[in-house]
Length: 252
Image 1 (cartoon, helix red, strand yellow):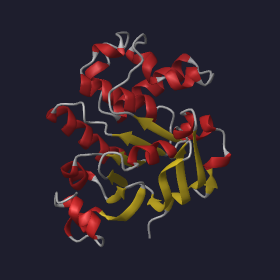
Image 2 (image 1 turned 180 degrees about the vertical axis):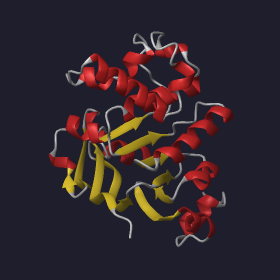
Image 3 (image 1 turned 180 degrees about the horizontal axis):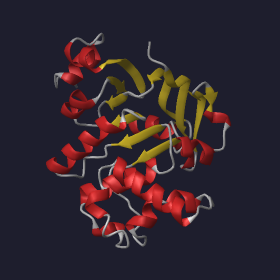
């Protein structure tokens, strides 16, 4: 029996009076790769951003319901505490442009005022870059700016920056959409590796990607969670007609 790491109860997300994510109830198992799919504007990115309280950063945006992380309601925690537990990487690589590769990795500690010795910093940088298979590529260039790297390397640097804070859950909003096929393949291999120690939740427009690397898939439509099941079942034998229509390209 898989243990649940995130459970949402009647989670709704609003922009002003407009409800864009409606009563989502989902149990996300630990150490799984979860894909979130659906047509543009269906609420999948808003739901993802809600999982670490980023949705509420938008003026006029708010959320209702519960999000439990290991049975603790994160809606009652300070958002900064939540984001240390649930990290996020965005569509386009966004290393801090003025910081070196080294300083990018430990940026979270500095931003949160966490003091570390040089040895601790060195260890965290090496360990985090190793976790994203980037250490051997950049170990002799740690003083260079993060923007000196290729797009795929920059995205892995952003993932290293996230895992350096030792979160439990990693959120990804279409992290390979701006990358070439080779870089995409490396990131996908990395996801398989990261799943051993983290729970990964991925918004993707790429159905082939979801089929290749996810354990479970959630299908959203018009702000509602239509179906959530093992990826194989979602793609081969979904329960809902809307899911079937989306998978087969008959979606109106």
